[in-house]
Length: 195
Length: 195
Image 1 (cartoon, rainbow over the protein chains, first blue to last red):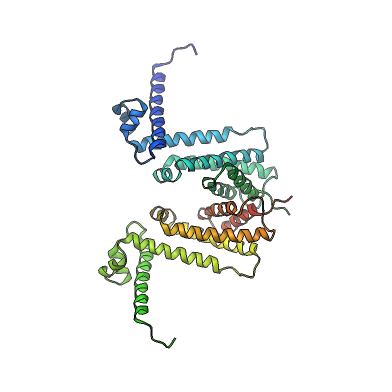
Image 2 (cartoon, chains in turn yellow, green):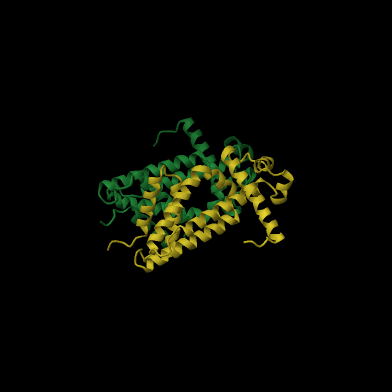
């Protein structure tokens, strides 16, 4: 508030700002040139910082890419977990989350899908994010099963696996409407059988 | 029959036999050592043919791997297309095909999934096989929609996309029973809405 920041806080904020600038620069360069071509010099120039400074924060362009991707994924997960009205029934929240997730998949695939997947494939932060997403979706499914809104003849673990795989199709469908239909079809698979 | 083979036919048969031996050797070596380690010398030794002969058929180990994978995929597709009773209703044939496909996914992922996918990712023959599979599944879905057994509010194209993505989950589920449940859940997504 009015209190002056501690020196370490200022340093931390500065460091975070440099890191963010490098990641923003990476994102801009990737959007312009594609992933493979990006160099540390380009990132430094785009971010408006010196190459020497950049190297204090990241050993190479791959590290900037990984950090940027981690920031993206975290932002997406936060978007997923905060987009839902906590007072709504679980089935409504699940629908909102799957809708948002499918749209993120759709958007990501169109912008950098295959190439990025190849470069980041086995990153630890992707595994962690996947696990967090999975747990979140599985908990919502479990709540909706409890409410009697979803089938209870298959474990919530298997239903979450089905869901997340089915929605990867959002990366290949041509329009936002098609993404909506995909979510509806996927949710129908989760529903209680008619008899 | 009793007619002696033409010389060219004998040559062709011999060539096919050498190619098959090389592919069998590759498969055996991959099963034993994993994919990355396999060399042309090992393949020749395992196949019981000379290295010089092997090089007349394949330029490198990657080419043997690709040919072997193409043979596998073709066999799997033949298995899919012939497993079904042509007299059965489309919905029954679809169920059988998806079941078989899911079990192939399950089996393949357990044996060589990630590694093989990384090595063969963008092969043309994989694309061709995917297209053949897609067309086959989409036609079955279209027939079942015509019969009134599946939902008609989403295009057969989008339903096929959903189906094939959902069933990739078969690669990650732990048991054959779980594969069966996954197919049931996926089919439920394709079903006509209750009202």
